[in-house]
Image 1 (cartoon, rainbow, N blue to C red):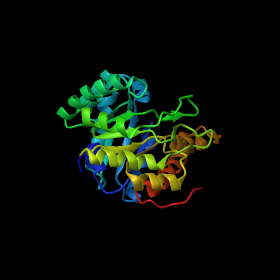
Image 2: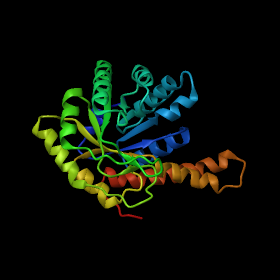
Image 3: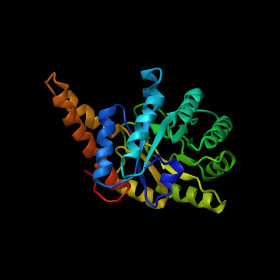
Length: 280
């Protein structure tokens, strides 16, 4: 089937797993996991990583994912994760990504709103979905302090920008958890209710899914989270295998690393899409 926009895939009546992939091995592992569990999946490309590969990378990557989507029986969305460079976001829109994110969470609220609104107009004119962020998802490893999203800010931002999805900050963290998270599950309900009261259909997104307790993830999804981002735990699974090898033959080690990534992806698909599983 054709690539779905973020709006289309999030209209499915479950939480949808979204995975950052950094090479073809990780991509194949995630797709295999989704196929084996018959799950829709959002493939995410991280802006900082994509820029490392230079000219024509964006178009080539988009075409590759399009070709895979057309030959696979599961819904797939191609999403730019944490886009901050406006020109790069536009490049992804023009290249065939079906969804992009503008991360203006480090900007003043009004500037974040203004830029997001401009990019939403461009994205929608090319039938591409757009995600933004209000509040600030913290990072224990990056030294970024959490700023919880207020329902009032979420309503105004979604209403004035027309974004398809909104990443909200409820206490999860990017990267590794170095201390116990203070996750406010009730805040999701408050924001969802406020949006619905104002007739806003913007979907809610959770960043920092890796390492979040299973019971919290399931509760957050039940309360209205539609997309859950997973990156760090796939990286950990991949690198754990690579770091323990003593072989120089990549054809021997990559399949083992791919299997580890696939199993980690399947774990999160079961939690996010099927809402089952226990903490390990």
